[in-house]
Amino acid sequence: MFNPRTHNTLLAGSQFVYRSLNNGRNWTKISPDLSSAPVSAIVYGCITTLDVAKPDTNVYYAGTDDARVWRTVNRGGAWTDVSAGLPKRWVTRVVADPVNGQVVYVTLSGYASDDLSSMIYRSTDRGTTWTNISGNLPNVPANDLVVDPTDTNRLYLATDLGVWTTKNLGGTWYEVGDGLPLTSVADLVLHASTRQLFAFTHGRSAWSLALSALPVSTPESGPAAALQLSAPRPNPAREGARIALEMPRAGAAQVVIYDVIGRRVSTLHEGALGAGHHEFAWSRRDDRGARASAGVYFVRATFGGATRTRRLVVTD
Image 1 (cartoon, rainbow, N blue to C red):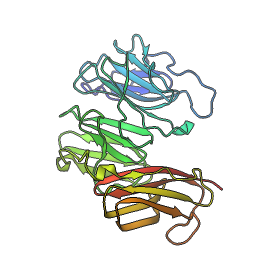
Image 2: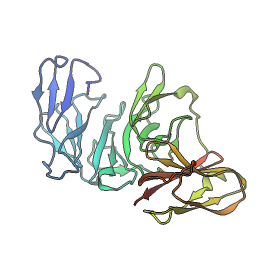
Image 3: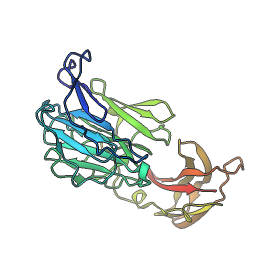
């Protein structure tokens, strides 16, 4: 992590935080072991994320894979554990607000512990207290967060189901952009001068979005917002599953099953549907008739600009 005001200063993390004041030629350890030294094979006791607060570059943050978040307000002279109030999950990012020096965000992933809850937390007191701002996000891991420096109410979030955004600090989230595969996004970068958002995926390349084309708002109520997709049953499934869809009104809808890297596996429905309740059965076959392998899949329903996604586990 570069210091945002002087790029001669860098931070690097192992289980310790190191700092270089001369662009990486020399390094000094500036923290104790910030992990809990776990013996579990699920986590490794490593620092997974670092950030420097742009409004006050004396403030550093660190997060670990064993659910710890740390803050120093004197460039590593003393570190405070600010994990209280956060779930015990892998910390994917700690992100300091680029304008307000009191605000910081944490994104978490429960993938390693089979907890797929969406987890984004915001603090207005440098991590002393936390508020969950996951809102209406699907239950998938959160991997990265970008705060828009031109409007800090606007956040961009990388998840295991693509990129989402909010214009009201998590009050309402919606998917952003067209064409991105349904896949895990690991990193986001906002190139401020060109207003381009770059998304880096797991196995599906890198993508960019011109934020000048981003809609000012998205429908947050009305017929499309009432689209409902049930949890697949059974789940886990061996020979197939049933999925129920509630349509708020008649119209064109799509129900598709994707694999974990975003490839379309099976189209359960594509076309007109009447208002009301509809059920679909998946026989664990792809569109070519081949039996789908065991693993994690996602059922995705779309109608009128609304999208609903459910996770399905298939076992042998």
